[in-house]
Amino acid sequence: MFRFVIIILFVVGYLIFLIPVLIFEWFYRKSNPERADYQQLHCVQAAFRIILGLAGTQVTVLGEEHVPTDRAVLYVCNHKSFFDILLTYSRVPRLTGYVAKKEMEKIPLLSTWMKRLHCLFLDRENMKEGMKTILAGIQLVKDGISVCIFPEGTRNKTEEQMLPFKEGSLKIAEKTGCPIIPIAVTNSAQIFENHFPRVTPCRVIVEYGQPVYPAELSKEDKKFLGAYCQNIISQMLTKNEILEKP
Image 1 (tube, helix red, strand yellow):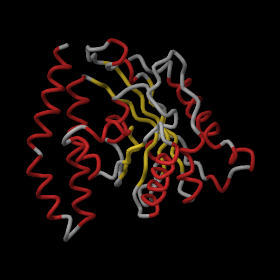
Image 2 (tube, one colour):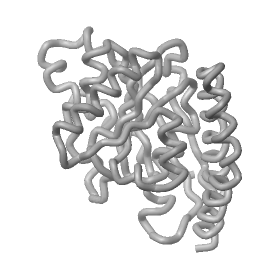
Image 3 (cartoon, rainbow, N blue to C red):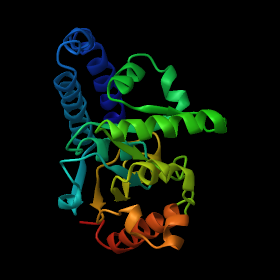
């Protein structure tokens, strides 16, 4: 419980402390938008690394060399924990927007930072609005900004390895031709969700798979691109289950 309280205090304090930074970056962005974006990215990445340290999380990273650093990509990740965002976002090499649930847009300061970092807010109950979010993601990739999605559509609270992937979420890669980077995060629920409200030190494995290029796949695999990527992630999760304990 002590770690949980410390992390909450740090997050609230950090958000308040960075209010002047938000104001400065708003003005600075008018003259140098890309540099301002990267400065904000590095601020948030630093905060996420500190939080993971406060949580006592030991992170083993595999396959990071598979991530292109010279172009936008679509990250596709399984989702068991709130900490999946911290684990993956703290390592992105270039500007990246995450697709988050619409409810996050109502949180003061946090939603401001998310918007500054090109995050998109998805209304899971409104198909028309959901399509607008996908179109916005397509535009981000065309603008050179990577996008990360959790195709299960929500955090997986079951005992199953993953929930079925929603095929529509992969349209961002289909329409732009960008590579898909499958990410398998193993054991992240052990940080917090498995024993709420305690935050417990543990080992987490984050593995990046080989890039998937939709244009190079067979017609059948293109048709079920979500299932194709889910199978890749499933294989990595199964392999890493035996490695998750020190």
